Image (cartoon, rainbow, N blue to C red; front, side, top):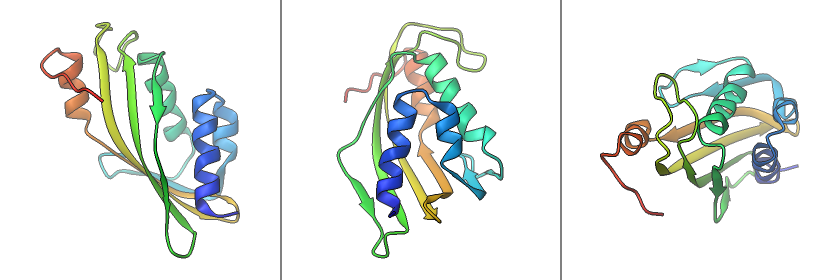
Length: 139
């Protein structure tokens, strides 16, 4: 199974809030790199990131146009659009009800039919500014 197929399945799992199925897609030697560049060698962190996102934005909708595979099929990346209303706490930020829209780049490397490496790239400052009412992003 190539990385793009695994990547598509992974996003379907995220959209259905199936955290155990999400965790089951990870390779035993899995590493997640978050937006700060910190590497996590366990599966709790990426699952918690998505749980937190879904709790803060329970109506979040993810959309994407194309998954892009590497030439050898072992890596896949996708630009994801995220839109939702800030209806739950996000760290220390209480719910504001504001609409938040953002873009993210999500990259996976596959090995043995599972996600071996995963990286997220998104602009948390722009999300914070939208929550504060200082910025409006239309997608």
